Length: 322
Length: 308
Image (cartoon, rainbow over all chains, first blue to last red; front, side):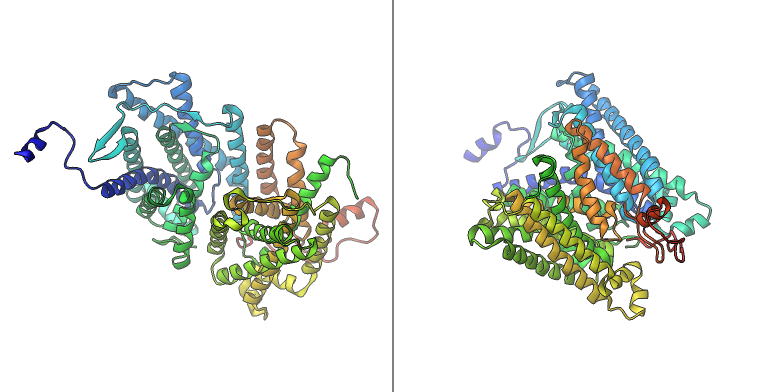
């Protein structure tokens, strides 16, 4: 009789609650998946540009920062910071923001390619690295000059606060972020595997001179690749701004470092590899933050890199060449 | 003591000189082709040891500097052994990871202050000391460039297979130059801590090391004048661009990109064998030096150099 009474009270979404430990574990995994998916998207862009053009674009995470500020400008300055939007309005707005972010990122990436990468390619690896580092300094301080060095807060636009399932909490924005990131990566994978330009991209990444001898316009492929990668970074920046509800001029630094580590640990060859490592890094960081201390969160990435690179120098899943 | 125009420029010159010492350490370490992004960490280790010795154990200045240098050299030796057989890209990444790991370790050692940094260091580094140090570093770099070890390192950097075929012990050369450069960086770090009087764990990290690498690459990575020129130019330029805090870094970033694109070798370019340095050719054209045309003006060996 007592048991019956317990089950009859109306608790719509609650199943019998799991132990607190399991709840926390799953919560960490969920948080980790969300942040990890953003790392993976930016890391993919990095890796794509590196394998096709053999150039490390240090300004790549700053393109994400530009996307984040684009989102800020639209949400706060243009729309005045709407808070209670219905789904019908919010979803197209989100899609619009992603498109704008991608456009901003893509434009920035193509400008960087034209002005900085093209004149400095082919000499040493270090030259475009330092040149794009200079561009990165320029972009960060430019954003700081325009918007101020303090973070600007961005209102989350999706309605409905947190969702609770079995004691695990996440916001609709986080779920959307994860879904969008995974969708972008699946789209990229399809592009790379099944479309003509995608195959050309893989060919150029593998053996650029042979591909050129087969009649592929390597320069056009390179430019297209950097455009796509930068657009993805811009869209990722929009997502990060919405999850963290803020945009700051130097957010590219930490994001970039972690994405760089993802790219190195996963190796350039397989997109799924970078996705897996990105998610894994996010989860690992969440675990360390939750169970040990948040002090070590940023050290996780480097520890992981050190360990993996000692045993598998070309990345977990291999790269085209090293 | 020497004083330049104002105390403000004194301190800028001092910082530039000390950074030049650390950059010279990087120059020597990387002269065999293994780029190291850990030199801020090596300098920081020297700084911690030198600072602790002077503060907690009341050592004199020069022995503390030497100890800092030895600490840097020892750590450099270990790191060098670690990256000896890796290919250049992976070796660079390992140094990156090493630097960041050093930061985390430094954060967690309470004796050297942990997250609150190590402070209370006596201010032994003056402008005179710094200028003497950079002059000594320049002499060491000059002798290194002309020595057997320095030339072997350059050969290894250009093509290690050919160097090995010529009888150069590639691994020994790499290890020797790495350790030497690490020691110099350690001394530079000890000098710096006795000026700034504080040693933070963050100063061992990747971004600091990246600044040193940029100084090295922009200044000129093939001659000993390079790191010195790079350190002075890249320390003075932000000070000379005295607009607002952000705008001057915007200009700085653009300048950085422009310089490195137009001069991939660095500001002070590599001398192809047999060609007189640019300065001497200029002086000759102006008439301040006698002498005929260049001896065997050989063009630099091709534009397709292997990646650094």
